[in-house]
Length: 258
Image (cartoon, rainbow, N blue to C red):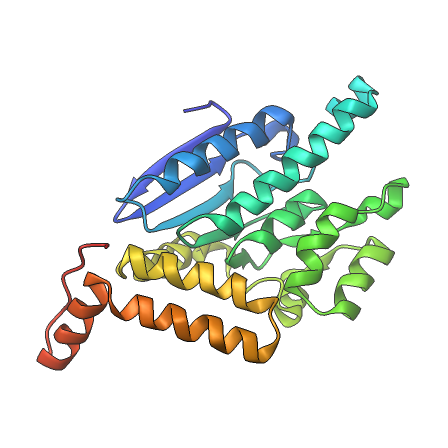
């Protein structure tokens, strides 16, 4: 376990805490590499059915570590930084289990990208979001990829072009987050959602998450054809048979996660 990522497990939920509190959990190369490594381990851990990503200290994530990038000054380092960040975001999307962002404080630039990349996001009432790269002459082009897929074109362009921070109320209205929660209730609320999802079959969650992202980019008829095949494959797995039998028999299912 890297000192940059703290992991705790309970009831099928793995919580990963970004632990660079003194820099608002900015995404250094070391932190991004550590998070990718941890996600790879979680993907193979059958006991984990949900992942929660949160930040230590006063904020969720302030984006890339600009001081680290400034100190380097090398184009090759910049390219490696942005490529690594892109791999990290895609790893969240491709993970077999759902990933929830638990946001407090600020989530800016690549930190906002991280929120947009997660499957679900819940934020404290005091949280703030933004893609302020335009303010320093560096357009948030990679954060734009996740942001433009999470919210509408007009909303994402407004955030990208103005560089202004938005509050949690606005983020919920735009669809960047699922729900705004009172600061004091955030931990309990996210734990409740994560625990509820973790009570489902891991295999079924994995099939569903993969299918969701696959069908999104397909034309309507192709999406239905793909998902019809997936439903057929899904109904043949042990957990589907168990779940259907449990429903008919009016008893709780006992998942094998296969």
